[in-house]
Image (tube, rainbow, N blue to C red; front, top):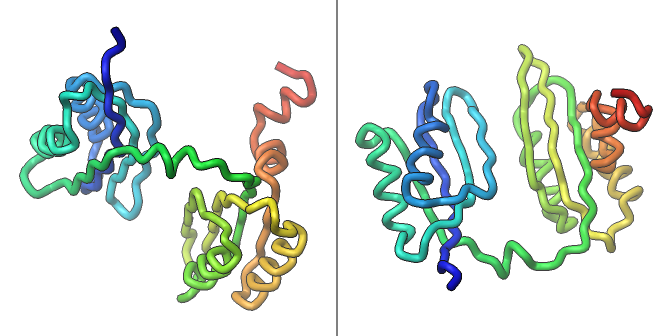
Length: 193
């Protein structure tokens, strides 16, 4: 007989220090979880992780949250646990992934303008990262473009928006971006080890 399981999405936000990810993964593993997806980063001194984990049926979302809270000093961590929504997560989408870059001098309103641009076209932002170097800023994002959109037109409009924001912009298919940005795929394309 197959064991019944529940899948949860778990997020943790806490001031960064070494060992937090080990604390998180140990706690959910001790509850009998199989971690099947994870994304972690540190932003401005704060650690954040989002993961999906499959647990035995008898372990509730409340059980997970309470156990996670006990892993950290009182009041230090913000923890959210929600049931994984299979219908939303597995809904069939006919989208292509593209990588977006923006570079230039930082100023107010960049993210508001860019996120509005994508939202108006029903383009989903799946990942976004911002790096600062003095007054210079670099945005790198991954977006999911619906197949009914003319990607070439979106690229033109995106570059036009970037010009208004006094930024340089790029938008490439994920496969092309990775092939020219990562050493491993280039070597494999060239047949080198």
